[in-house]
Structure formats: structure tokens, C-alpha cells
Image (cartoon, rainbow, N blue to C red; front, side):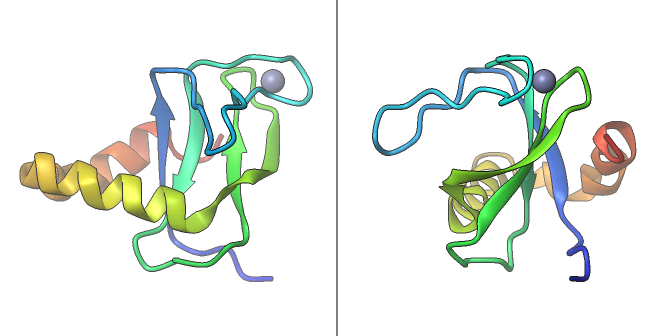
Amino acid sequence: MPTPAVLRWPIPEPIRCADGHIIACPTCGDTVRLVLGMDLDDASDAPSAMSCPAGHAWFEERLPRHWGALLLAELLDAEPGIFARLEDLQHVHGGA
Ligand SMILES: [Zn+2]
């Protein structure tokens, strides 16, 4: 499976999904600054790629990829200038 080009972003707040469950790292249980892989062009229901600050990586079934695409779209709406910085941000936060 090819790895899609995505923005990997550490979410500062705990992530609450649609059913009220707080997303936690399955390995260490961390709930903040989880890195979510977001792809604007991926509106599928496939599990989102995530990692925690300790570097554990997993696919989160409760967060479909269209959720991340929506989040990224809202982010870009709120702060259009961020688009110019995406590469920098990817450089800083990528590769976890
Ligand atoms: Zn972890």
C-alpha cells in the first residue's frame, strides 16, 4: 500500500470522536499531542494514521480519514496563510 502524502499534525487537545470516546494511544495511553495524519484529498472511511509523542504509531478505527480531511479544510479556512507553511510544518512534525 503506497503511503499518501499527508500533513502530520500534533493535536494539542484530547480528540473526542463521534461516539464520545477520547482517542488514546493503544500502547501508552497518551491522549494529548497525538499526531494525526491528515490528507485533504482522502475522504474515505479508512482508519486514520496516528502516532503519539512517544513515537507509537497506529491506525485509529474511530477516526475515519474524512474526519482529518475536514479538520484540515477547516484549519485552512480559518488561517489560509497556513497553506504556505505546510511544507515547513511537515518538515517539523513529519517522520514520527
Ligand atoms: Zn504511545
